[in-house]
Image 1: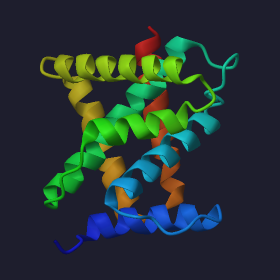
Image 2 (image 1 turned 90 degrees about the horizontal axis):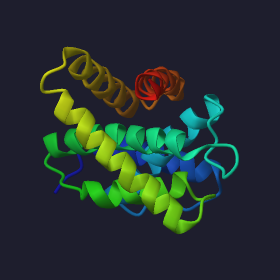
Image 3 (image 1 turned 180 degrees about the horizontal axis):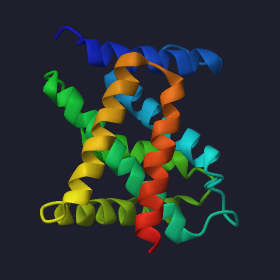
Image 4 (image 1 turned 90 degrees about the vertical axis):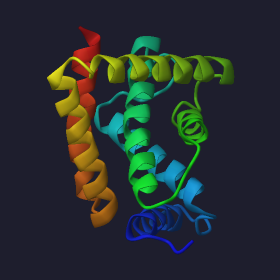
Length: 172
């Protein structure tokens, strides 16, 4: 299958990240998607001073980060699906989650990721009846698409705003 503009942009972002870190080019679209997702969450958590390190982040805050991974991942996966590319959402989410929470032990990271997935599912389910959640998901969708197509790192600030909105809503 010929790569779409979206998947080519995702690979270009991943290759740029790899190059900046002295790593080889991306091996494929699943690796690129995982790397871009990891880059987004890592950048956002750093800017929010929510560094996922034992002692700096409590489990509740970590689960909110994992929920945000799921929100972003689902949009990446849906956009790729629109281009005819199917990726296993659970693999991409888990791989990005373990990368984001690498400073927690594996069992705790797995629990955080699983709880984030459950919180994400509850969020989506409540979106069936709550317009503000549908609006939030739509904003995330637009931000993800704009970031991937433009490859503009300045749009990480939009993700920071979306993350902080989710964080504030879920901390209540």
